Image (cartoon, rainbow, N blue to C red; front, side, top):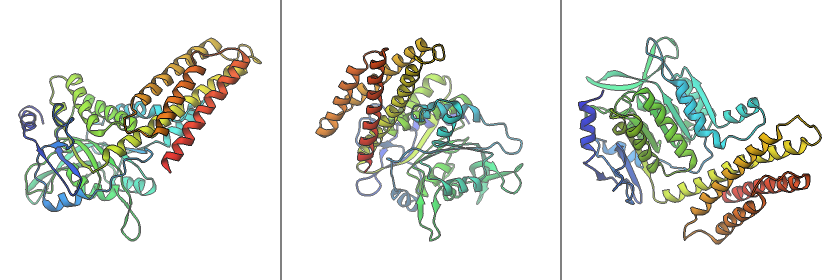
Length: 418
């Protein structure tokens, strides 16, 4: 649905209210994006008012938020019946690009795929039962669902659900509402206690954020939030296929970098405005979110861990290159030494850039030990790796320095986690 309905949504964005949910918490409801001059600079989030019932609002206010967990993503998609195929390959490529900086280095594609599977799980031909089984078996932090939206009637009112495959008859539709999906996504033990739930659910579906009247249970996104999922991001209107792929990459690249999700949503809207001209896709993004007191500290701690993980991957890659170059002396012609040195030079520059950003993020309130660690590591790396060194003795020193940097990052990361 485009044109007039999308235009009305743009108009409604001017009507914003602060929404508080419980002591010290800010809950963003039905948010079509942050207004740069206000929402992104204010301490409290700015959000559009919606028609949430008090009971659902209270339930969502108690979402347990744990932003600082090692990322594990579930990508589920389905194109049941005669519905057109969803752009699963485009979304998969977008997710692969997003996770790539944090996938452990491996010398062969086969070994690297094994590490990819440790971060990203793909569920093709998704049914509600398959999603439930996957979430019960693995603690996913993020769930990305790509499917068509489908209408259904409830008490005489039209609602929209996800068109998943029917478990008993895969060629038929199973139109799943947000409440059923929320139950499947939140794994519970035999006593009914929730063991774990995703922190973020992103819905790449038609009408996944649509709310028709105040009498209906609400959109899929709102229903998911009401089941206790802290952050749910969807679209108010159908997105063009290209826009949905852009959304997947922008969201997950930002999440995995450790960016504040409020900034990530703003960046997404900006990208959609520039890369999907002549559409209202930028205005279609909606988010239901819990932003408790201290959320900024959790985001900063997660960003620090992600920076360390990314540097560890690069140190491992540098170690492998230096090792290959060292072995080339005994096997002339077995390794393209010139090419490896060029690759190593580029990698060293990338590490220096990451360390510079890491240093720049130190605030006035940073601990002295943290400040000393970042400045000391940057200085040591800059001195030892101004350029790739080529003699046998120099290569040995450089290799030990690379390995030492990786060990230090890993040790400090475990200490911070403890």
